[in-house]
Length: 153
Image 1 (tube, rainbow, N blue to C red):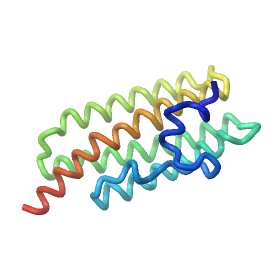
Image 2 (image 1 turned 60 degrees about the vertical axis):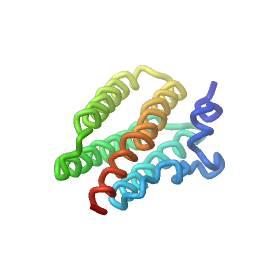
Image 3 (image 1 turned 60 degrees about the horizontal axis):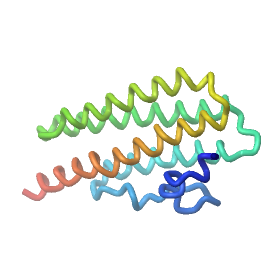
């Protein structure tokens, strides 16, 4: 089955024709976090537009994937600095999720060379969309709520 027909894919993508991930699902209410999520989702949109091309060039997919991964890792640094600055009580659990992502993308990058383009895109879907978007919807939203409560005290 193509990833473009998967239930997970249809859930995150508001319009399959334009390949734009539904931003409303990932808004936290914190301007800095939301701005970074927006940039990250733009990179994922770009990745999936490339993946929908009839003759997807695996090198082009890998380049777009690496760009998204690099941005995600930079986002983690900013988030962790933000958590440290306010002594966020759930920092260890949040960092653990970031570490899980690092391990998963390293495996994806290492194993991707042995996968067919469709299988590679399926794995990207699992790691870059499903896992990380769930991260944004739960852990990042909790962090944003904590930051906003602290700001209002």
